[in-house]
Image (cartoon, rainbow, N blue to C red; front, side, top):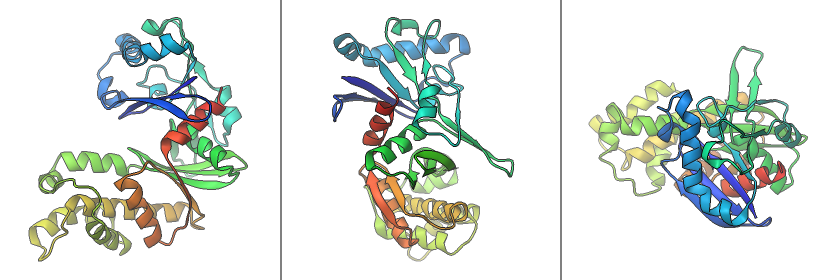
Amino acid sequence: MDIFIDWGSTNFRAFLHDGTKIVARKSANDGGTLKNFAKATPVTRAREYSAFFMDQMGDWLEKHKSPVYICGAVGGREGWVETKYSEVPAGIDDVRRNLHKIEAPQIGAASGFDIYVASGCCIAFQDGRHDVMRSEEVKSLGAARHLNLTDTLLCIPGTHNKWVQIRDRKIVHFETAMAGEIYGLMSAHGALAAVISGTPDTGADFGSFDIGLDLAEKGHDLLADLWQVRAQHLRAKTPPASLRAYFSGILLGHELRQMERFFPSKPPVVLLADEGPKRLYYRQAFERFQWKVRAELDSETAVCQGLAALK
């Protein structure tokens, strides 16, 4: 049995894998690095991470005695350990070469077990910009491996949405859109939250979502369009039925417009997302913006395939 973990800034997800399929899962919504460990000092951080890890994984470790392979923000600056980034172009071999084995003094309560953390990936652009990711390098390479694709563009929705371009089985370019975090923060705090909170979260509302896409497609500025969530609620004769879905449409529409500038040829996309409203919304937005989806894959399969390749 293999133990694979996707430990990000908002969630902790663990998978017991028999070599062909996932046979058991664990998750902790309070296990995200930003939620549970953000206030930890460098002195206490390793102790808190290792204690949480053993609380979640102790029974699996005792039963299976398996090495553990982890990807995500847990390998970042505020994580359990800070791992070295793999610089683009980066393939499986590059990420494997930069695997970090947790040892004393960071391993703490997990002493006696083999725990490996993936590297993350970084890119420096000629215009002076920089970008980084942790876990998405494993997921994108794992998805390409699973789908047997040597060249593709992947869209990976999340807290920080990643668009990852692979050529010859190596990551050569990626871009980040903070749409997920903006949605979460502005839905909970501030002027938009005051009106969005009155809209029940009942799942996908494609009518309201389409109205948001309509606005984004007109080519206005994102900052101006975001205010429409409140203005439509206060002044429109027939405001969108779901302001949550309308807000999602605005953000997603602008995300696709931005990515059209980064990837002007609009190559076919692999949509890497779990089943649910988010995946349905992306599917609809891609159709609206005439961007072909070549395949869809859930993130669990992708992360397990990627981590399995690092063994």
